[in-house]
Structures are given as structure tokens and as C-alpha cells.
Amino acid sequence: MAMATPLDDRAVDELAEQFRGTVLRPTDAGYDEARTVWNAMIDRRPAVIAQCAGAADVISAVTFAREHDLVLAVKAGGHNAAGNAVCDDGLVIDLSPMKSVQVDPDAMTVRVGPGVTLGEMDHETQAFGLAAPGGIVSTTGVAGLTLGGGWGYLSRKYGLAIDNLRSVDIVTADGELRHASETENEDLFWAVRGGGGNFGVVTSFEFDCHEVGPEVVWGLLLYPYENAADLLRFHREFTADAPDELCCYAAIMTAPPEEFVPEAYHGETVVGFIVNYAGDLDEGLEAVQPLREAGEPITDLVDVYPFTVVQSMFDTEFGPGARNYWKTQFVGPLSDEAIDVAIEHAANRPSPETQVVIEHLGGQISRTAPDATAYRHRDASFSFNIFPRWDDPAEDDRHIEWAQSLFDAMAPYTMDGVYVNMLSQEGAERVRTAYGDNYDRLAELKAKYDPENLFRVNQNIEPAA
Ligand SMILES: Cc1cc2nc3c(=O)[nH]c(=O)nc-3n(C[C@H](O)[C@H](O)[C@H](O)COP(=O)(O)OP(=O)(O)OC[C@H]3O[C@@H](n4cnc5c(N)ncnc54)[C@H](O)[C@@H]3O)c2cc1C
Image 1 (cartoon, rainbow, N blue to C red):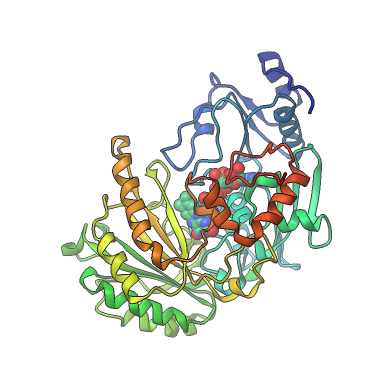
Image 2 (cartoon, helix red, strand yellow):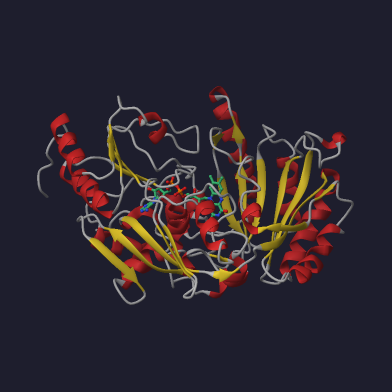
């Protein structure tokens, strides 16, 4: 291995001279904003933030980090709950300026830069009545979401974000820009479809799109918590037979003090169903009807909405700036006993912002073989998500302990698998759990493309020996 050259001001000046984008140091205006990520628990101070304008800047920054033996983090949307977009002392490659979105309406494809958010991509594709499957909060980065798999309301119908990925351009640890697709650098393409940021910095994503909207059936239904056991059993049965177009999340949450909630329920724990139908509007209204009749809803917002509005319904509720510690695990249909355990624990949530969300998967996601891409756990019906959220740093332990205790109580009922994009900082064993039987192949490919583990500030796959 070549000797690293030390990082001094002159070296940073040289990097800045090569750059079309902006190179920030701790004393520069914009530095604090650039090092801030969605999860307020993460407060890291990189030595340098390289805000890239294009692939050439990414090549310079990767080469710079390698030559100076710097800790390297890569930031796109900055949403990752584990905070892997930033590091202390080293170099952050900030991709947020790389915002190009090019739709080809005839080919029904979209090519996006790595700084694009889901809302920005939807904005452009919806102008042509198209969408590529992504997540459900518009400020999430397309890049990080896709590299871990990427699911949302459209995934039961059209698959994960990676199932619609046609190709990527990626700068690997050696500073080379490679194109990866089903026919070029196929092994690398396999790895980036779920392997996160382990294999290089993706500078461009090309997706297949589908005809979606511009309006879809969507709804939030809230029900009193006293009926939670019946409602979650209903959700289990209803989702088992649901068409692919229908995606329904169940949540244990606090009724917000909004006018669409009766005042008596403001601040009370409730069961929520969040439903979306990606298809014909009349069929959708009919398909979601049983959910509206699962009991006496206190809130029923089922209606026809623009898809772009649906995609930003939870932007405020899951906005940046709060402290978060996620514990999640894949599950099959929950047994009655599992539902009872969840209900009992979730009633004691340590903050009103804290939610337990059962995200609905299956459908097209599970029709791709588990070894066809790095994303492994395609057989999961749901992801059981514990999302504590609070503001006061002095309360960190209380919220984290509560999440862990619910997670432990649910352990007998969950699968041996977790979504890599929802891991907190939980250690190497949990990363193995995320990849299951795909881990060893990923480690071999890591040894091929990043033998020195330059890209390690992530849910890290260690290069095979
Ligand atoms: C409010 C909220 C809602 C969410 N909803 C969903 C959802 O509906 N569906 C879903 O699947 N997930 C969802 N997620 C999880 C989300 O997929 C992950 O947090 C994802 O990592 C976010 O990507 P990002 O680009 O915003 O994050 P970042 O923190 O910028 O990046 C995440 C990771 O990816 C790496 N990375 C980012 N860009 C690149 C790149 N171009 N090349 C190489 N590595 C890169 C980073 O180094 C980091 O390790 C949600 C997260 C939040 C906070």
C-alpha cells in the first residue's frame, strides 16, 4: 500500500483548485449546514466537506481521501438514521449539489443525480404521468434509499427501487468511473442493488418508470386504541389477500391535534392504517373500503389525491431535527400473541412522537429471487419498525432502552432479517443479518472493488480475507 500523505492546508487548497464544486473547511460559511443530517443525535465534524458538482469532483475527492488515508463518508439525502453520511475529522463527499433529473417519456426511464430527493424525482416524472418506486417521505435521498433496496407504496406492484434500476455510474475506490448494469460489470451491479455505499460512490442512477397517477387513492384511518388487538388482526388478514396495487401500513401512534381528529382523541394513542392504491381510482376506492369498515374510525381521510401530495404527507411528522434511534426487523404475518405483546409495549411509548409501524411488503418484491440482488429478505411480509423520536439529549437512554425492550419482546416472533436502510449503529452482526446468505458474496466483491475498505463509514461489509 502506498504511504498516505498528511492532510495540511496546502493539500486541501490543491483539492479545491481541482474542484468545480465547493470545498468547505470548519471555518467556512455553510460548513455547519453541510455536516447536518436528518437525525439530530449525529453531530460530527469532518475536516473537509467536498461538495461535488459532478463525477469529476467525485473522482478527485475519492482519490484525495485514498491518497491522504482519510476517513471517508458519503452524503446524499442525509436521511440515514445511523448517521453514516458524515464522519469526524475525515472527508465528507457531499453529493447534494448533483441534482440533475432527466426523464425520457418515450422510453419511460429517468436518470437522476445522487443529490436528488424522492420529491424532486417525483416532480419531474409526474409531469409525464410516470413514477419510479421509492419511499414515502419526499425529502429522502434517492441515492441512499436505492442502494439499500428502497421500498414504498408502489413496491408491491412494481418492486423495490433496485428492481427498477437499469444502471449506475459509480466511482470505485481506485478512482475509476465504471458503468454497471445487467450487461456491464454485472457483479458490481449485483452488489450495489442492496449493498449500500460499500462499493463506491454512485454518480448517476437510471430507473425504469411506470404509469402512476397523477392521482391515486390514499388514506389515513385512525381507530381507538381499545380495539387495537382486533384491528391489527384485521390488518393481518386483510393484507394477506390484498392485490399488488394495495399497500397498507399499520401504525401505533399518537393522534395529532389536527382538525381532522376529534378533540377528545388529541394526544391519545390510536391505531392508524395508511393505505395507498396504485391503480384505477374506482377499483382503489372499492379495494380500501373494508379498511374503513374495520371498526368505527375516528378519522377517515380516504380520498383521491395527487401522487406528489401523497408522497409528502409525512414530511413534517418525520422531518429533520429530532433525535431518533430505530430498531426494526422483518416479520411474517404476526401471531395473535405477537400482536398482544406489541400492543402492550407500544402503549407505553416514551414520547408522543414515537411510533411503531408495520410496513407492508410482499407482492412484486417477493417475486425476485433472494440471490438475484444483494437485497436478501424478499420473503418478508412486513417490516416491524420501532421508531422512537424525542428532543432532549438527556433522555437518550430512556428512549433507546424502551426501543430495545420492545425489540427484545418481539424477538420470538420476528424473522432473521433486517432492512439495511433502517439499521441504527448496531454493529457487524446486524449487518450480516441484513444480508443473510448474500453476505459472503458481498464480502468477496468488496475485496475485489474496495480491498482496503475505503468505503467503511456505512453498514460495513468487510472485504473477504
Ligand atoms: C423520514 C424517513 C423516511 C424513510 N422512508 C423510507 C421508505 O419509505 N422506504 C425506504 O426504503 N427507506 C426509507 N427510509 C430509509 C432510507 O432509505 C435510508 O435512510 C437511506 O439511507 C436514505 O438515503 P439518503 O441518501 O437520504 O441518506 P444518506 O444518509 O445521505 O446516505 C445513506 C447511506 O448511503 C450512502 N450513500 C448515499 N449516497 C450514496 C452514493 N451516491 N454512493 C454511495 N453511497 C451513498 C451513505 O454513505 C450512507 O452510508 C426513510 C428514512 C427516513 C429518515
